[in-house]
Amino acid sequence: MQTYRIEATVPADGTLTITGLPFQAGDKVEVVVRSCEEEQKHNDPYPLRGKPIRYMDPFQSVAEGEWEVLK
Image (cartoon, rainbow, N blue to C red; front, top):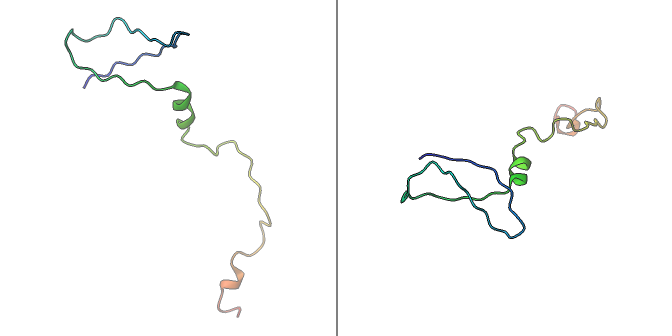
């Protein structure tokens, strides 16, 4: 399957014309229209990068009540 990608802006009348496609007349093609903004939102593989980190009681024991020796 050959893929041809082009970015275009939809005009006020809502129509989109694509010219100069590298396909022959009569070829069957699939047309998929996606918004570029959504693609950029989901494209971040590290969504927490750069977010602030806050440790609450970093030296407090974790699951201290779970130890059977302490009971």
